Amino acid sequence: MAISNIGMSPISMISNAAKAPKGSGADVTQQFSDFLSGALEGQNAAQQNVSQLSKQFAAGELADPHNLLIASEKASLGLQLTVQVRNKAIEAYQEIMRTQM
Image 1 (cartoon, rainbow, N blue to C red):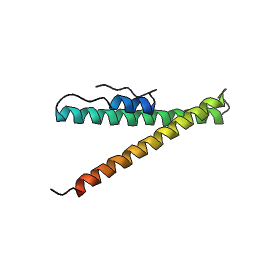
Image 2: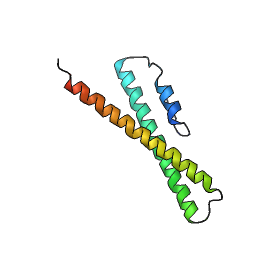
Image 3: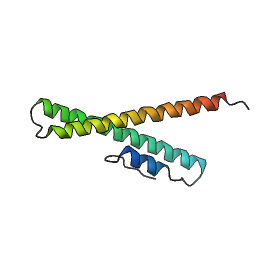
Image 4: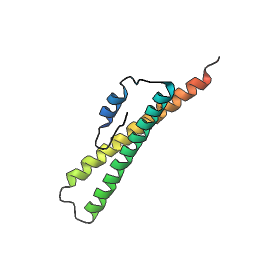
């Protein structure tokens, strides 16, 4: 499952991930790993876009500052989503570790 996250909203990335994967455990693990890597790359691209727009704004080269505000808010929301997903993954791991056999 190849996922290109650049330009995808976090909501569409989650809905794509919610589809049941098919294959062996190793395949599912690889798909999940690829999904997370793609999501982090997409978030990094959004942050870099904001950085570039900020530089253009500071230099007076940005014609429409609304683009900077929109990109900044998208990157901020994406970062908040990333942190929450990380927190939930850590909670799940800790819960598994507390499970007694």
